Length: 419
Ligand code: HEM
Image (cartoon, rainbow, N blue to C red; front, side, top):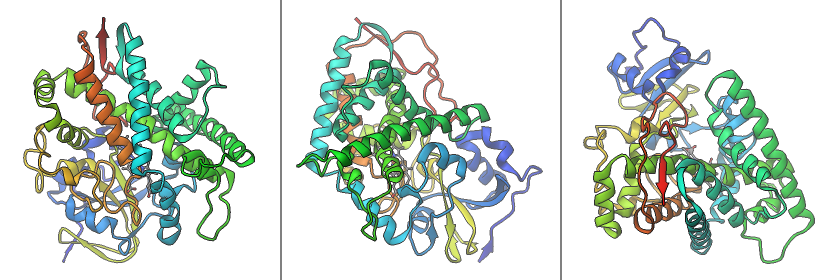
């Protein structure tokens, strides 16, 4: 077995190279000429792995655990503390089941219907130039709140805009400059306060028949010992549904890029919509950068791609690199709308390791994203309305997608014009 090679560059501390963004880890692999590389990040040694085989090993709970692996800077903004992402073993599976039980086919149909109505209402009102990014943020926040049982009718428009913006801020402040990071921490606190009040109200005013609705499910949720979750933890979990759904704003802006900066993709999808819609969505999730990497600690010595990763190593799985891995994906740099035709069963099936934009593995037993169905319904509703139901013209704009910003989306946020 080979030893993980040290990277032969002067600056082994990659903390200073973070502005290479999504391409940093593939650059390190090129420099080391190896699929497994070691570097220093945030004053700690880290081993980076990528690809289908690495993902299988990474998700196997005998090999890796999550507790303590996520840097505090990410927990204090993006995820929140003591949420499902930080749990392992039985405690994780118990908590994760609460999320997965919300995603029944019936409840997904309801989400689809709510989003479809809200989006067409918003697009019908739209006149002239608008940013698809801003429109999506508003529609997604209102739709997920409605689906989750959160009544926004007592909030002013300005308050709604503010709380929707906090969700984006928590994401975009995780890895950035110190000022934006501090703002993100403040916005997470404000957001948690908002969610805590909702949980408290739901506990004092339970509504019969709403047990499978997110707000009430988290308000009544217990831990694996049968204890009611503390209000702050229940609030973090409620936000674990609201925030990532609003984060879909980013994928909608990227969908804008695919459809409106690439007339070939738009024309092809429009011509064969029913045949291509799900393959288009899957290719979008694979092709564009979103969640860059995931950290864990090795629980035992693990062999990946012929390299020995010693027990207790801090390891990151490169998601973007896996979705662009030439060893398993042909011409990964080409957006191929037909790539996933005939592979529809791969969409949200319970053992995915090749296309892992939202994580891989099993939904309940592992840390795989709980929101894949909400994501698919969202991308289906938006692609249908943008392609089939409305006509837009496309103003001159900067479609560049910076690779050194998280999350990333077209510079001008996908500007459209509607008569
Ligand atoms: C976990 C990505 C949308 C809820 C994750 C993970 C990723 C991810 C990479 C980590 C997987 C891991 O740790 O192994 C995304 C992306 C989304 C998205 C790119 C699109 C914007 C959603 C939505 C929801 C959601 C819409 C909820 C409705 C969660 C939860 C977890 C998670 C609760 C934690 C799962 C666990 O630790 O067991 N997501 N997600 N996500 N996601 Fe998503």
